[in-house]
Length: 162
Image (cartoon, rainbow, N blue to C red; front, side, top):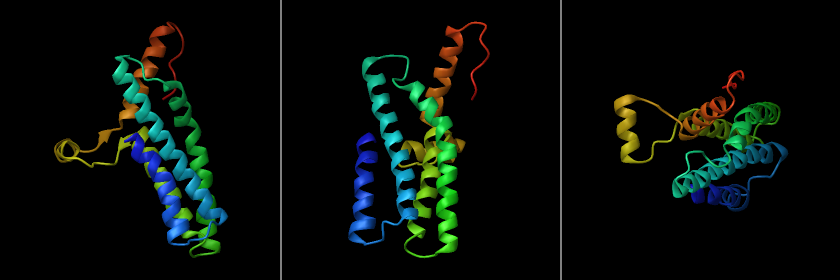
């Protein structure tokens, strides 16, 4: 998974801006940057998860950084969606629609990584989806474990925000 996420960033740039020749306008680049940021975070998570599983550690490496991303991403994504949406309304066309599409995709990736799994791309996932509905994201589960471990290590401290 991590490798696919990382390959997708330059691949998508090459296809959209190179092969198809869409303009690297401010709106398109802003949307693409948000998309690339979320794919890089997703790749980082899968790399950390592989390290955790390989080492047998109970804690996810870098969990604090992912908890920070959980909080920092929404205002960034909001700003990018607002900018690309405003751009698409004021100058509709190839110089803005791609950026808005990338921005919306970045928001969906954020939900997919940090809250609810939206990607069901294998038989086991599809069976789960049809039998039980949407599944909590793997990173969301790991961050909940991280919060619980932090709370246990600080008795009497107020609970950490979700």
